[in-house]
Image (cartoon, rainbow, N blue to C red; front, top):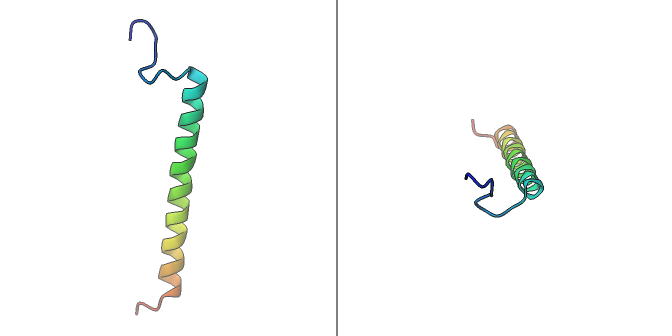
Length: 47
């Protein structure tokens, strides 16, 4: 990477946008999963 080029060919701004989208998607998935688990465990009479 001596020439400073990105492997993907994305500019730094594009890379930042992709990274932001990736992390927002990751945290949204985590939040939805946690909420679903919470609701299921509290609403379904397991015991």
